[in-house]
Image 1 (cartoon, rainbow, N blue to C red):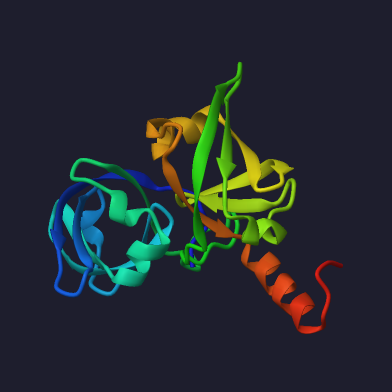
Image 2 (cartoon, rainbow, N blue to C red):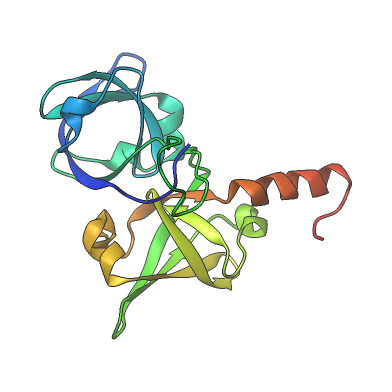
Length: 201
C-alpha cells in the first residue's frame, strides 16, 4: 500500500530484457542502501518488488503483465522515475490509499502553464469513465492528485509548483503515456453497483 506522495525521483541506470518478455530495471536513488529484498516500491505508480540492491541502486523485475498495462515498458536508460516506498504504520497518510496496481494508461493531450501552477489534460479509455469523479482522487505516475474537471474521456488535473518540481511530471510532454490508478474505494463501489444491476447511485 502507498499514499501517492513521491519520496524521490530516481534514475533508470540499466534495462535488461528477460527470457519470456519481462524486463529487469536497475534504478539509482539515495535510499538504495536501506532497501531490503522483497520490499515493495512504487515506480511511476506501479508496484515492484526489490530483488537485489547495493549502496547506490536497487533492482526490480517487470513481468509481461506489468509491461502490457503500464508505461514501464517505455522507460529508457536515463529516464527519471517517481519512487515511493510502501506505507508503514509509522507514516502519516498524506495523499490517499494507493495500491500500486495500475488500471490503465492515459495520454497527455494538453499542458497549460498558469500563474500558480500547471493544468494537464489527460485522455483515457472511455471504459473507465465511471471511475472519474470531479474533485475525486486519482494516481498519475504514482502521484496522488485531485481531478479538477471531468470531461468525458478526458480529465484535467492541477499541479502545484512543489509537485511539479519534486516529481517527473515536469519532464512529460504532450503525447506521453501516464500510468493511472483509480481510487480503490470508487472501484469497489462501481463493482457493487454492477452486482445489483445499477450503473450509478
